[in-house]
Image (cartoon, rainbow, N blue to C red; front, side, top):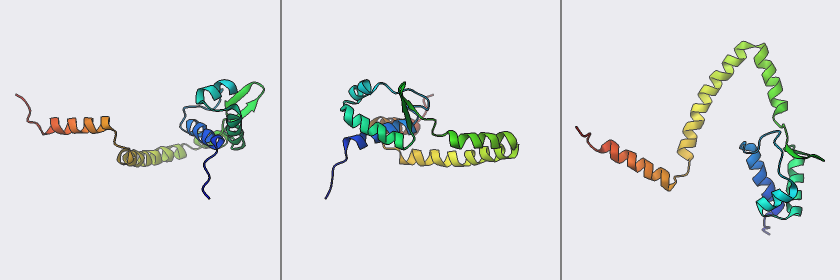
Length: 136
């Protein structure tokens, strides 16, 4: 039997995406539950369910002062920062790795990006102007 996705799960996925894409940054305080429910046009119980799910995943922290995006990358970044500080060769290797990988990632992103009407218009305008003879 196919079951529709629960609204709380959809809200959690949306907020998780905002966190992972950096729209909501670690340490940033979220709007109050009431304001966030209004902004997302969802019920407060569904929002509460989503926030509980994100809290279990360690992406947010809730206290009496409100809800903030957790410093979820801290367990990864602290040891890495110490390694870079202690070993200059590791830093050099890391930047060499990034130089190689980021070029490939950019190429893949460009080839996999959806074609929008604006992008299509730009590319056809570029190909028209590049194929036209230069005016003298």
